[in-house]
Length: 267
Image 1 (cartoon, rainbow, N blue to C red):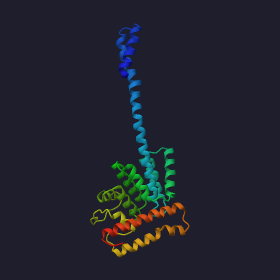
Image 2: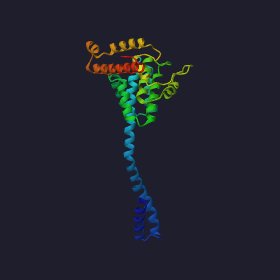
Image 3: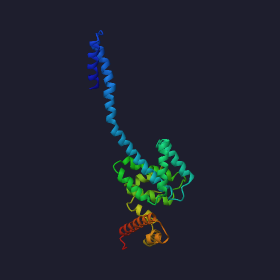
Image 4: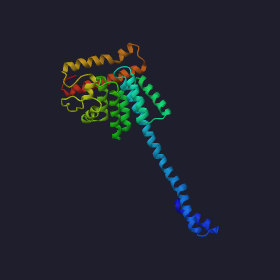
């Protein structure tokens, strides 16, 4: 449309000016100008909503990534220098954040790190937003494993518990889980056990499928006592820490019930 409109206007103007072959030259020049200022401008305007939507999705993914990384980094103790270096490299190289974007990312990281919101809550929020984008879900688990490997060649049990929890929430198979894990940690020589939907629940209890019923009951009592909201309140915990304890206690109770049910045991 821009070419046609510009060509007609140019043809009329140069023809009226009496320039030799003015109609021809006018149409050629007018069509070029019309294409540049009308067609391309319209195409650019049409692309703007898609571009803005894409940027919003990218921003949401980065937000969830920073929150999950902050909680995972604290799983094995205080955040250390190697984990901070990994996040710096992630923000600058993989995420290509500007200086302003990096400042915003650091603020989000610090807020999530000091928050009492659980890793599982952040993981559920991420999956709620990105369940339909499978590549994003797998990318997230990959980054989490990379962070866990930043300060150690062996996966810490507390970190593995959270990663198993994430895999369960993200509906990631054991095969995919082990494949991503093998990129960062040496896999054992023996064959890994088949994936089970109970794996995240065993991890929450600090138990394994090989443990006896009595061992699982003992570990459940230890975890339940540790995270009982009344006990947290008695220690003078804040309202936020009590809410966190309530969520953790609920998850532990659910895990115990699922495992006992699978083993045909009365709770």
